[in-house]
Amino acid sequence: MKAVYPFDPIIDLTPEEAEELNVQSGPHFFQTRLFDSSLYIVFSRRGWLAQHGFSGDLLIRDPRLSTPIVPDLCVIKSIPHDRLNQVKTYTVEKGHPAPRVVIEVGSDFPNERDYKDKKAKYQRMGVPEYFIFDLIHRELVGYRLVGRKYKEIEPNAEGRLYSIELSLEFGHYEGWARLWEDGQWVPVAQEVWDLLAKKDRQLRQKDRQLRQKDRELSETRRRVEAMGTEVRRHAAEIEALRKLLKDKGIL
Image (cartoon, rainbow, N blue to C red; front, side, top):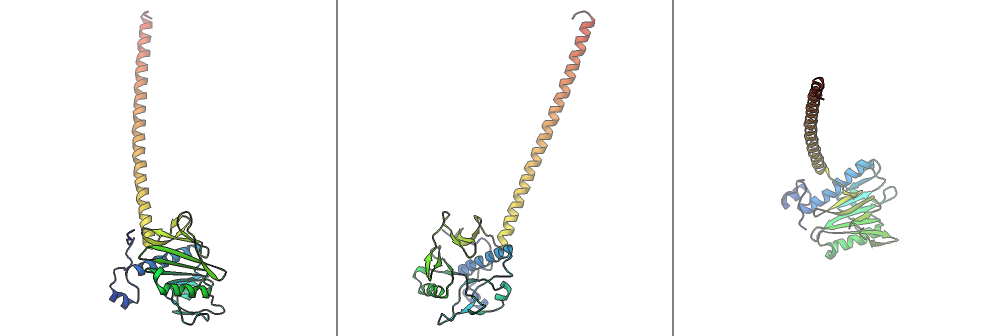
C-alpha cells in the first residue's frame, strides 16, 4: 500500500535540514509524530498527563543494561508528562520505574540487528509491551511480556494489536500505523480540524436539504389549502344551484 501524508507536519526536510534540527527526516519523523500526537490527545482526554508521561528520544539508563538505550517513544507511568519532558536522560531506579510501553519505528526491522538487540534489552528491563512499525514493509508487530519472555501479540479480528497498558489498539490507516480507540483511529490535531470541517459541511448540507424539504412541504400545504378553497367554492355553487332548482320546483 502506498502511504500518503494525511497532513503536512514539516515532513519535507532534506537530510541536512533534519540533521540541523536534530530530527529524523521524512517518513520516520512523520510516523513518530503520529504516535506522539495521538498519545497526547488520548492522555489529555483521559486526564492522564498529570500522572503519566511519554517521551521521544529519551536516553534511558538501566542497571540491568551495560549501555543506555534510546527508544523512539516510551510511556512511563507515575511520572507526570511535563516533568518527564523536562529531561533528556532518565535513570531507572527507585521512584523512577522502567517504561511500560516502548514504540519503535524502523526499516526492515526483522533483519536489523539493532532492533533484535533492543528487543532483548527491553525484555531484560521488564518493559511490559513493545511495538514496532516497519516503514518498508508497513508491518506492525507487538510483543507482550509473559513471565520474563516476550510473546508476540496476536492481531484481533480487525487485524489490530491491543495494548493492555494503554487500553488502545495499534493498527493501520492509509498506510501508516495509528492508535485506535473504540474502533476509530485517533485523529491528530489537523485531522480533528478536518473532521470538524467535514462534519460542518455535512450539517450545512443537511440543513439545506431540510430547508428545501420545508419549502416543498410549504408549497404542498399551500396547494392543498388552495384545492380545499376551490372544493368549498364548488360545493357552495352546487348548493346554491340545488336551492334554486328546488325553489323553482324542479327538484
